[in-house]
Length: 148
Length: 144
Image 1: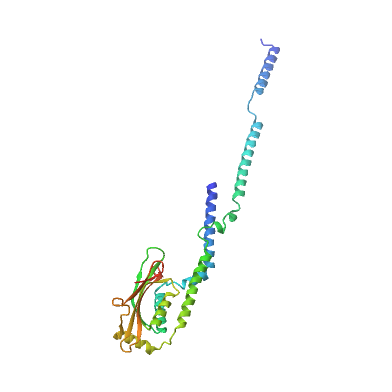
Image 2: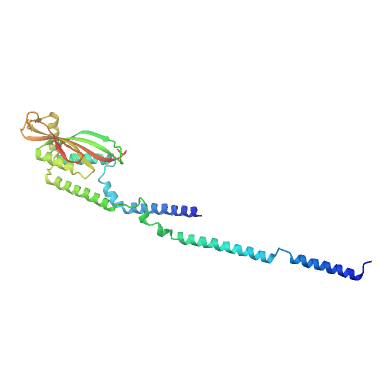
């Protein structure tokens, strides 16, 4: 028969067994949560730092894109001005020469010239020797006249 | 992410380039118009050029006739050549002056060939010169 002492011993052993299992547990929710949150904070800090670095590197794009590094947009003003000057001086020379020997053009004179030309009233003479009736000049590639 | 940033940078660069080109285009308007006036662009300009040459010759007392007029395509650049051959008749000094004027015409042009012949008018016995001048003038490609 089980005595009261035996029952108390069994209860005591059961209580002892529970306490020993509690000491051997390996799950600590509070500790695990803290570790998880810590890792999360570290990762967030790293990402934010990386993004900050990228932002500081690329936030001033306006300064990077300047007229100096834009290809094809830089006009050679000097060349344009030189070209215009060249043509303008040519135009001035043309005007000067044109005014120099200008004769008054009368409509009748023009008709006379045209009619003379049509009837072939101007004849050629040989002035450059027997075979040199014609003096011909042509421009070479260098822009120099070659008389032949 | 870096690719996205690079894309944004490229996009901004393209945008800035196009803006700069537009600004340069606007800023150079005066110069472009001035340069444009020295180039034959269309049929109207070509006939104005011919008219100028003929007027100049007549002003100098020289008879002029157009012998040949032909567009010669070029392989490079955005310009063709307008090949013109003129015959001139008149007093020696005047013809030479017209030739000098043709050489100084304010256009992109050059004298390719020049032939001079001394002549005497049968009726009056006056000495003169007959000249044949071949000019090449740049014209805007495909417009004439």
